[in-house]
Amino acid sequence: MKNMKSIVIMGVAGCGKSSLGVVLARSLDMTIVEGDDFHSDSSREKMRSGIALNDSDRAGWLDLLSEELKKQPNGVVLTCSALKKAYRERLRFAVPNLRFVFLDIGKEQANVRVLTRAQTHFFASSLIDSQFETLESPIHEAGVLVVDALMPLILLKEQVIEWLKIKEKV
Figure 1 (cartoon, rainbow, N blue to C red):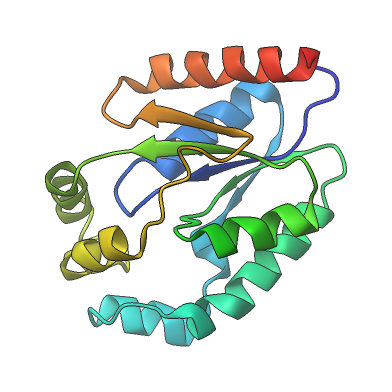
Figure 2: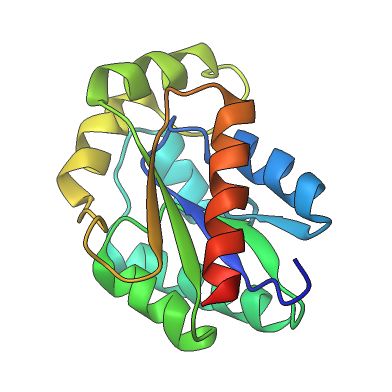
């Protein structure tokens, strides 16, 4: 895919953004940008303490991610929750025609996944409810592919690559 554009792997905590982002970036020979790496220390501490981030907490983070998108003229795979439409619009403003893959998952499954990584990740499982409360589904937005987060990773990767090939022809 020669004219690859940037793509955001999005969804609530525990949906598999990082896992899909890594295999997708590797398959497409693109750079992976892990959105979690750009959270401020204070935001990380809030999440570690079970305090949900608000719009002002996320503002600087979204600015940094927008700059990372702009730095990659040949495209990048970005993992970012992008829970609200306003957050997605902010990223789209940075890079027109930005594509999103929404990893759709239920609350119970997300909670199980977050609990299994509790020793290695700063996100407190008590925040799962707030993630679902904040989520504004992107299902009817242009440039969004909705996938079942519980599908095997290899099938998710193949589904995204096929979708990108179709989008490239348009």
